[in-house]
Image (tube, rainbow, N blue to C red; front, side):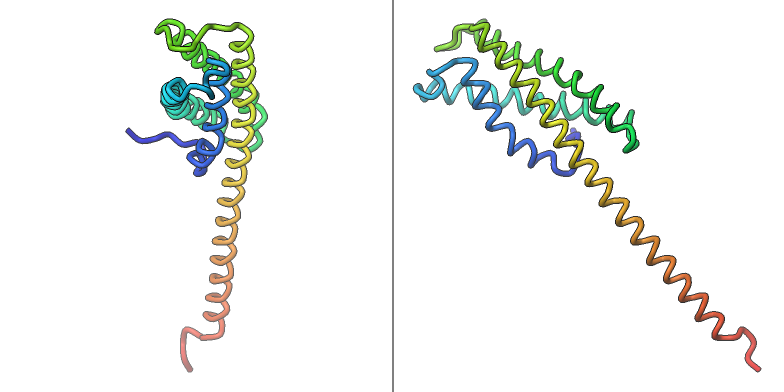
Length: 177
C-alpha cells in the first residue's frame, strides 16, 4: 500500500511534532505516573505512538490529500483550511476518545479517567491540528512556488534557445549564392 503524502516533508513534520504530542497526550491520560513508572511510560508510549502514527497516515494524511485534490488552486487555500481543520479536529476527538476510553476499558495500570485531563487533551489535539495544518499548507505553498519557479526558468531557457536558433537561422541563408 502506497503512503499518502500531503507534502514532500510529511515525514519530517511528523517526526518533529508527534513525539512531543505523544508525551503530552500520555501525561494528560495517565498523569504523574507516566514519568515515574517506567512500565507505564513504555506501554502508553508504544500504544499511543502506534495509534497516533496510524491515525496520522491513514486518516489525517488522507483528509488533507482529499481536500487538496478538491480545492487544489492556491487561491482556494483559505477555504481548504477552513474546511480541513474541523475535519481533522473531529477525527482527532474520536482518536483521543478511543485512547482515553480504551485505557479505561482495558483497566490500564495507573489509569483513571479524568474529565479535566480529557478536555485538555481534546484542546491540545485541536491546537495541534491547527498548527500542523498551517505547517502543511505553508510547506505545500512553498513547494508550489518552487515548482512554478522551475517551470518559469525552463520556459525562459526554451525561449532564449528559440531566439538564438532563429537568429542563427537568419544569419545563415538557406540558398548559398
